[in-house]
Amino acid sequence: MEKSKLELQAFGWAFSGALVVLLVLCEAAAVILPGWQLAHNWLTLFSAAKVGSLRNFIEGVVASVIFGWIIAAVLVTINNRLLRR
Image (cartoon, rainbow, N blue to C red; front, top):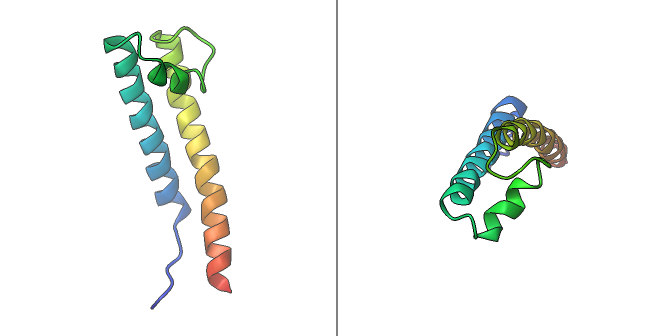
């Protein structure tokens, strides 16, 4: 079985995109179901602004992209170094 390395660029965009999609789903749930606290807790991880506000959404998207790339960098580095062994 051949070991394949992860590519940072592909993994970074994929992870960031997944976090942005989760944020959008949670924002939609917060607007549609304002009493559902599960969505509100996820949204307050990225911003101190009021849930459902434009500022909360923009800060959430920016934070999701940044954290997605940080997580990707860590995971790709660890994975690729472990594959060398």
